[in-house]
Image 1 (tube, rainbow, N blue to C red):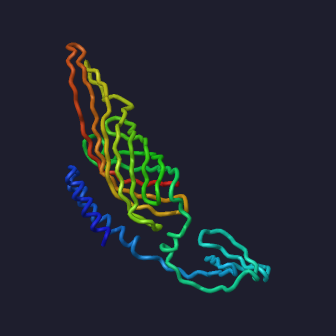
Image 2 (tube, rainbow, N blue to C red):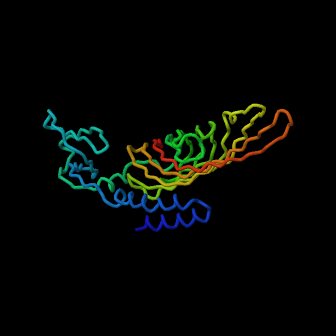
Image 3 (tube, rainbow, N blue to C red):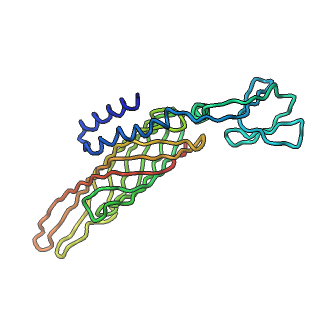
Length: 267
């Protein structure tokens, strides 16, 4: 039940920061959905080849034309061939794939890239579901801490390029892990608001931040599929200048969105 405690703690922090209750109420449901992946293992029977040197290789033994050699397809989808005289014994084992995957040689630090896309769902402009794409590059520490810097392309009433600092924290080190994510930065406008007759417009962009949760599914020792549900806030400031009177009006619009994102991470 540690996940539930972590979810409730995060809700309190988000509410104190002014995050809407509607988003906060989604968190327990998301964590409950993630519990079966992180608690229940997947059992599988494999062949375990024990060598005289003490090493053990697990996978599936394949038919081989040479009776003096054994061919094994390992759990990492590699093919190993062993001489019979180097083998002490071969036996069947039932293993927990999730537990076994923790022993995979996943790097504990180094460069990573995450690219994901999704939709910004909300109200306040002409479209209720708006395309968004982001890419984050950074340097991970351990198997849980992923700080980085990102850039993206998003559409509100006008297209903007968000540039932001991003941080992801994995709650576990298994093959399937829930995570917490947050980012803060500034969005640069690619276009100005639509001009009206006699009025000039100039978009200045604005501050953006995001907080959310998700899950990471390892697809290899250096890659993972990621799903996330994010609350996103975007402020966009514009200057409207009247041609005839030179009267200047400053307007700030605020957009609050729920973003469902899917992507890949390479580390």
